[in-house]
Length: 343
Image (tube, rainbow, N blue to C red; front, side, top):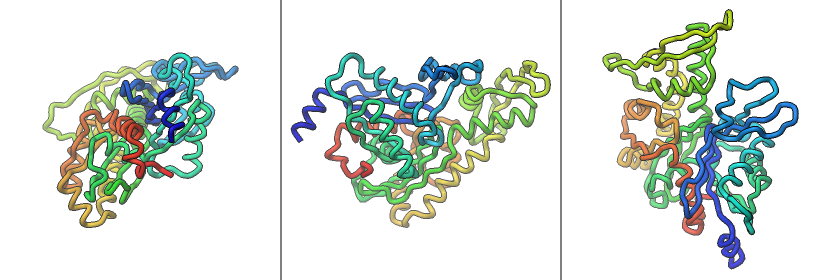
């Protein structure tokens, strides 16, 4: 025990939200010290790293043949082990500057539906990236901690965490997950729906960065026709002749084209309520549903869930960082929250 305390004193422990879209890192003394896209750009011939994070994201859809821009995580789990290791090593070195006597202990949040094989890949990647010890925590549990929910009480709290690759729905009581579902539909699938719509409706191709920008600017999960409609001008590539094409997209048509992935997210919430015990559902009805994750920022998503579930929906004050803040709380108070870690 004394030796562990000594290691923590000399080393800087980290809490990490290793997300499909973004990776965030939290430290005890500084809070959130890194928030970067989970993207790596490599030289296709030599394999040398050209850029990581925000700089690498700008390469997506713009790379010549000799450069590959890779998102090493898909649906909340590692799709490319080697590139994930490179990315994690880069981010850890960026946060821990200078010579470190002791390697950091890292607490990483993972989806509830993660398999043993996927779990081992996360742990091994972290060890190879320079961690001395790795602990895992489920994303909904981390989100509940980040939002200061009373997870240790005999009271049911529902968390809906909409990330880039997965939507995590969980009911938490007595520091344990009473019901959980991990749906591999989230922000990325909404972006893809926008790309498909523009391709099929206008015969125009657009990149994933532009699709994400469209989602942020005029995306709406709960569009009502009498609302003042936003319009966005975009430029894409004509499928037939490759010429640039300028289009105007409306908020209404984007709301229509993202209906399918949004419905899957909402259905997972309804399904969770159906499969949860009556007493816990009564607690959720009293406390409301916590909505967190970057996908929670999609306009109207909270209203749509509220209408379909007939329950109050509470958006966390900073949904993008809820999970990493909760992971940080678990890291700082490991003894108090020892039950929340995955064995």
